[in-house]
Length: 382
Ligand SMILES: NC(=O)c1ccc[n+]([C@@H]2O[C@H](COP(=O)([O-])OP(=O)(O)OC[C@H]3O[C@@H](n4cnc5c(N)ncnc54)[C@H](O)[C@@H]3O)[C@@H](O)[C@H]2O)c1
Image 1 (cartoon, rainbow, N blue to C red):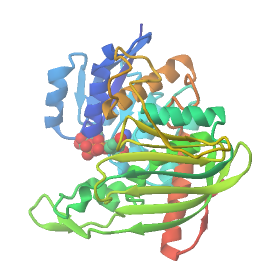
Image 2: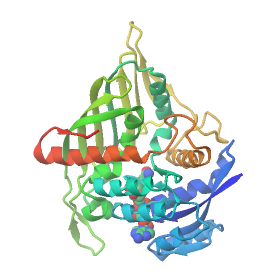
Image 3: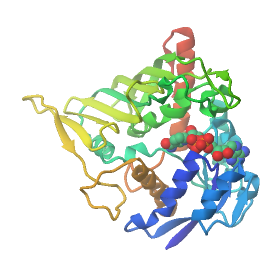
Image 4: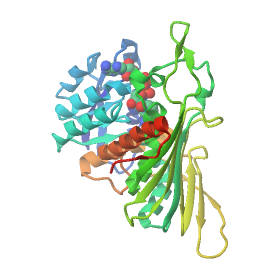
């Protein structure tokens, strides 16, 4: 059993989720590798308590992430810090030759993203991947499998997105994700948008241009001092792109929505693919349901398949149980380690997002900001 020793930088919501996935490693079957958390770096000391209570393997607790990166006992880093820190944390980890599973969007903007990719180019022996767990839902994997088999025929249209609704409440407190200096000019696109890019980009369906409409709906929120602060980030983004299928050169509309204010939608990541031979719709809103339509010339009938616990990486859970968000996260951590140990993912869509795919997302989001500002269709550079 090969052990990969991890340091976590940023012990917030996602730092806890990552650690919980690691703690559930006994869930996995057929793996000859395992992660071990040996170090945590975060800003506030109170965050250490939970880790101390649950992980005797952690020997280093620090407020200075540089100390974690300098630790020879750390082989790999999981970085889950606010977006304005992505560049400095990721570049420092890569320069120290630590394998890196970084949180999205890998840089607060296109310049930060390019700096991280440049740092990575200097260390080809280091694995850099970006968190993208939603495609591990069994329904999404079936869509991915159909893409790989060419089962859709010629692509007619693709819709993808990530919809939340918590921000409909104007009294939801302010946090860094709603502040431009920490979250970035992209607003919701940098936060939710990148998750929606994973399947289309991995499929080779790349945006050539974009017309974006962005909305700021709630203008201020309660702050920690009892007052209200301006909320300047984009709440919702709707992007209509002309996409090109790299496989056959055909073009089709690709719509991407990232909404923090989508009434009734709690955490709905979705993908819809319409093709000349088959069509499919999957959303985490209905995590077991995959809608499927085969077209062979006769009736056009949408069917509903109930997927089970069918995972890329085998687990102890039988096929009839339900699959959920934390299962997807565990699959993603396994995917990162699989690629680290074996050199490649087991199949095309069973990996984490590649840095060059995030670069396409940054070009798309930057063009989307311009498109909205000028009411224009903007090219997305290849
Ligand atoms: N994959 C997903 O589904 C998903 C979901 C939510 C957030 N995210 C991403 O994860 C990252 C973190 O988001 P979060 O929701 O966990 O945020 P969070 O606010 O819950 O946690 C961020 C943590 O970073 C720590 N931090 C701040 N400055 C630091 C520094 N200089 N050194 C070390 N730690 C520092 C904070 O103390 C905090 O604990 C972001 O990139 C976000 O986009 C991913």
